[in-house]
Amino acid sequence: MIEATPRERRRNSKKAEIVAPRQGFRLPRSVRRLQRQAPMYALQGLSSLSTRLRDITGREVIDMRRVMEVIQFIYQQRELARRGPNYAVDDYGFDPEWTESFLTVFKTIYRDYWRVETTGVENVPATGRALLVANHAGVLPWDGTMIKTAVFSEHPHPRHVRALVASQFMGMPVMSWFLRRTGQAVGHPDDTRRLLERDQLVLVFPEGTRGTGKSFKDRYRLRRFGRGGFVATAIRAGAPIIPISVVGSEEIYPMIGDLGPVARFFGLPYFPVTPFWPWLGPPGMIPLPSKWRIQFHEPIDLSDLAPKAAEDQHLVMSLADEVREVIQRGIYDNLKRRRGVFL
Image (tube, one colour):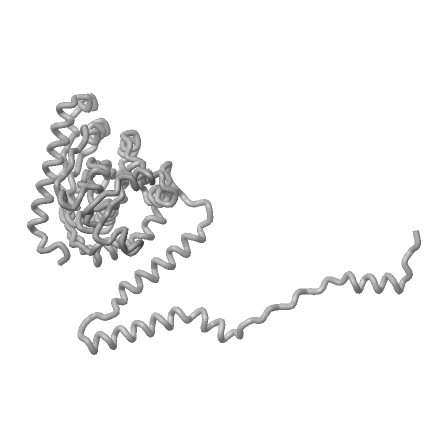
């Protein structure tokens, strides 16, 4: 083997030198500082504009509180995205921290879009288990979202409500992930029982999809509450039943027809036809701004009943009819108190 001469070794060493990459263009420090402070300057400018417009018009044209809520929501989502994979969820996939970050959005819909008036929320216990039972309507389960928002934002001791959802919705790829992440579970007696045993607030809709899929001409007429399975579950768990009457959800998607063949093709319980859907495409799914009222009635105490009483079908059906009557009467009372559908 022929050794390289000293000259060749020097030449090869020069070729083997590692050349550092050239640094890309970097903005001046003053410009970088301006980039960091730009959101603050924009907020100050918007606040100044809001004050001037209020002085000129005599009313609040730009609500800075709403603007700050939007900014807070954006920052919350950014921080939550940085948590990494090690965040706490329960057996059902419920992420309380992530759910609470969406309360800003839901409160805006609750307060400004549907202008919900809530009464009797103090009937929901501050601690311990309870079964919340409500009427169901509106094609999509917005009533469940508003009930959950009412309990968390109006109650003296905010609590999360775990709603039970039809299995069809839990089979949809994106929908099922969002529902589980925000605390919902499949509407099955076993899931209801396990949640109640953990002293949770569980929300059930005994009408099921028969309620959300009823036509507009049948609005505010409750369907049958099945065979009273929710009562039997409440008796076994020793949980009080809190009836809830919801007015306003019937008008968000006035259902004037149901395309049964299309629903069966997609595996859905119904395929709604409204004055705007499917004619306007995606904009047709924007809910109408109806006026809502939600009433939480006094609890029906079942603590004096033994778990074996859940096997008495006559007793179970009698209690189910009582709950249904309380909700129906509350619907009629709140319809009288509501001054208009959209006022």
